[in-house]
Structures are given as C-alpha cells and as structure tokens.
Length: 437
Image (cartoon, rainbow, N blue to C red; front, side, top):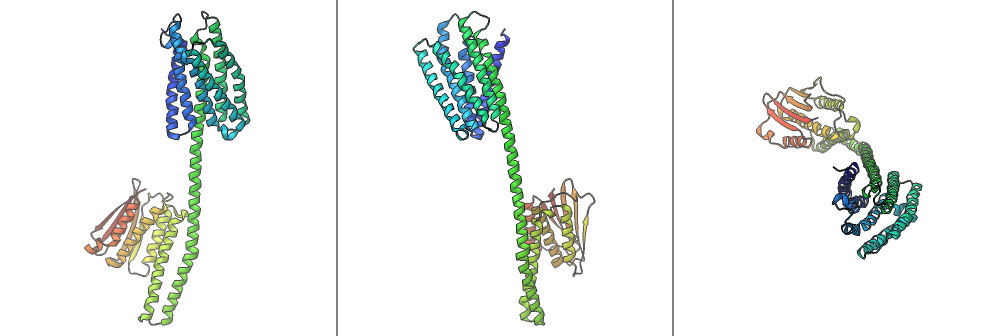
C-alpha cells in the first residue's frame, strides 16, 4: 500500500497537471504571455518528478543504476528549464522590462545561466561525465543571487506583485531545502530520508506559490470587472451629459427659431385680414406646419430627458397631450389608469417615445376619421406587461384606413420596443399595445 508521502506526491502531480491546463486556457482567452509561461512551468514540473523519482512512478529499483541513469539524463536539464519558464513568468507578470531595467537585466542574466546549465547537464549526462560537485556548487551559489533579486522586487510597488514575490521566495526556500536533503540522500543512500522524501518540501512550496498566484489572478479579474463597470458608468454619464446638451440646443436654438417663424406667419395672417384669400393660405400653412414641428421636437426633448424616465411622468404627458389635443373639438377625452400601476418604475426614453407616438397616431385617427364623441386611453399592468388601449366610439376603420401608413407606423414602433399591437374595429375602434415591462 502506498505511503502517505507517496500519496502526497501523486496529489501534487495531479494538481500541477490540472493547473497547467487551467492557466493555458487563461492564456488562450486573454493572450497574456505570463499565463503561457506559468502553464509551461507547471507542465514541466509534472514531467520533472517522474524523472526525479522513477522508483515511485515506474517501479524502478535503486539497485538498477542503469535504468535510473536513463531518467537522470533529462532530470537536471528539465529542472533548469523549469527555472527558465518561471523567470519568464515573473518578467512578464510584473512587467520588469518597463518597471525596472536593472532588475530586468538581472533576470535575463539568470535566464542565460539556466539555459547554459540545462545544455551543460544534458551534454554531461549524455557523455557520462561526473559533474555532481559542479552542479551542487552552482545551485548553492545561485540561491543567494536569486533571493536578492526576488527581495529587490519589494522596492517596486507592482499591483498584485506581493503574491508573486512571496510565492517566489517560498519556491526558492523549498528548492534549497530539497537540495540539502538531496545532498544528504547522496551521502547516505540507506538512511531514513529517501529520494521521494527530499522533494516534498519544494512540492509544498510550489503548491503555496500556485495558491498565491491564483489569488492574484482572481483579484486581477475582479479589479478588471470593477474597471469595466466604472468605464461603463463613465460612458453612461457622458451619454447623459450629451443628451442634456442636445436637449438644451434643441430647446434654445431650434425651438426659439421655430417659435419666431410661427409668430411671423401668424402676424402675416392677421395683417391680411381676409382668411379666404390666397395670400393668407401659405402663412397659415406655415404656422400649422411649424406648430406640428414644435410639438414633435417637444416630444423628442421629452423622450431624451432622463428626468422623465418614470411611468407616472409618461402617463401625465399622455393625459396632458390628449386634453390639449381635443380641447377645441366636440370629442370628450378621458385617460384612465389602473390602481396597481408601479408609478415610480423606470421606463426608457425609447419606450416612452414609441408608445407616445402610437397613442398620438391613434388619437389623430380618431379625430380625423372616426366621427367619435368619446375617446379613452386606458393604461394598466398585467403580469409585468404594460397595456395601453386607445378606444373610441366612432364608426370604426374602413379597409383603406386599416391598410394605411398610420397602422404600419404604429406596428413598426411597437416592434422597436418588443411590443404587440392589435387593432380591433367593432363598436368603434380599439388599438391595443402590450409591452414587456
């Protein structure tokens, strides 16, 4: 039955493989080189330990030096390539090239040493050189240099850098303990410390490093989401400011100009006196057209103004328009609402504008074609759907009217707000609009 230390090593191996795949997926999504190098670092770790502990993974006996030497051929070169990948990860993740040129040059120097040592170890293993003293000496000399470089990173306030720095320190300390235990195993192969035991400190240190880097990654993702939300809020505020500017320009410049044109055309009609003459026809038509344009512009301004984004404001606007529109006509207008309406609920400018223009078109049709005595707008809510009914007691729609531009325009406006429009011609005309709310 496998011992606890063996089960622990198998567990670490499975974590390395899983996290290597996870960070490679992060790289494929974000295209950040640091995730690729960290993924390769973990993948090489996954490959390294079967080479370093073949007796555990491949049932090779210590009494079979020929078989063990086959795995040893690639063990130390892989170890130095692991250091290459981890150093590249630190360089890219902390942005050393931009943050500190001296530190960047130091880490590049480490990369050169690691690559040269990987090549040297591979050649020495293939040529069967006895180079253990050189290997252990270089490894021990590298430790203080690596520790100095990592501690020097504390001088630079890099966001999320503290997680990587503490993780790197852990890995360096774990590697040093493993190196010292390996020396003890080499000196006393029959002692209580086995080859598998010697690698447990560095494997634990690497697990801590993975944990810290995962925390850094999650914090970075969370901060990115907050940044996106803040950017969206800023864009929204900019849109609101632009809407207010457009409203002011329309009201002050365009509205003022149209009002002047209307006043002058009305004065021209009054000066001519004879309302049936040809000379008064054009000024009267100009005045009527300007009045309609002003009303349309007021509707646009009303729909753009965020202060009007409430159901209560919409209903009041409809009621006011209906009363004003039928004020000088024999038609009686009534706006009816249900008690369960959420008066303070928000309704977007696009929805308000399209709903109002549907109501306006229906009221105009009732005024011009229905010969009705009463027109009613009924607004109510059922199951999160806002219903608007415009009903008159006139003669109903003929075939020509039902296929006219007015009905097509109303359907188009209902489609723009994902609504459903229905026209019923029985005992007058009823136009029903249902909009998801």
